[in-house]
Each structure stands twice: as structure tokens, then as C-alpha cells.
Length: 166
Image 1 (cartoon, rainbow, N blue to C red):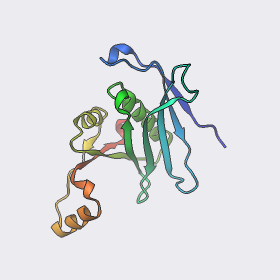
Image 2: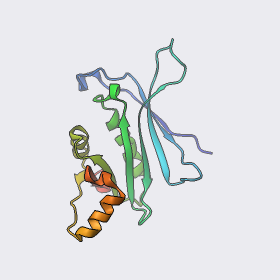
Image 3: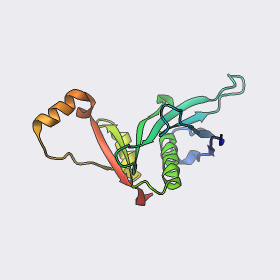
């Protein structure tokens, strides 16, 4: 079994008004047998020596290829623990998503869903090249059925980015 890639990231403290963790490690958790196309990316921050040996998980996201065409990588559940926000950690996770895309020559787009009220996240994604997908005009009844199946669609925004921009 191949080893899990690990990237050690050192961030400059001048890039943010918040103290930046000296080291954050991004790890790819390999897919499991039940979900072979799913990869979990996790950001760890080293704990103080007197604390537990295990590093603290401070951010995470899950990525997978969409089944219909296999040409879209979907980023799901990108979340940074509240006390570690605004320190560039989400950007580091997105850097790792870009590495995954570059390792695959078959991907054409990257998509994600973000809560429409999360202006900071939307600004980050737009800065990274994502754009909002436009709602297609269509059958009102069909849209109502979709909303009934997944009510979160009312408060979420779907965003996409072409791979060539990476």
C-alpha cells in the first residue's frame, strides 16, 4: 500500500492579522473499500509538547469524482475549526485539492457547494477562481420537488471552476 502523502506548510505571520500556526500538516486519508472514489483531506496543527502526543485536527474536507462523467471533482464539507479560521488553512486545503487535480489528467472542473450567507467562504472561493453556477430556468414543479428532497438547496450556492485555471 502506498504511503499517504503529507505536506508540511509553513505560513508567514505577516500575511494575516491573526497569528498563523507555525506548522500545519495536510494529510490525505486514503479511500476506504466502501467509497473508493472519496478522499478526505485533513489539516493538523501540532499540539504543545506537554499536551497529548496526537496533533489536533483543525480543518477537513472530502473530495470525490462525480459519477456521471468522472470529469468533475466535487469538494464537500470544507470546514475549519472556529479558533483556527482566517489563518489561511482553508487555502492550504484548496492547494491540496489543486494538487489532486494536477495528478489526474481526466478532470475538467472542480465544484463545491457553499452556504449563501457565508460571505468569507464565497470571497475565498471567488479569489481562487470559482464562480457561481447560474440557476437554470425550468419547470417550477421539478424545482419544488428537488427542494423537498434537499431543503439545503434554498440556502446553498453551487460554485465551479474550470481545471485549466489551476
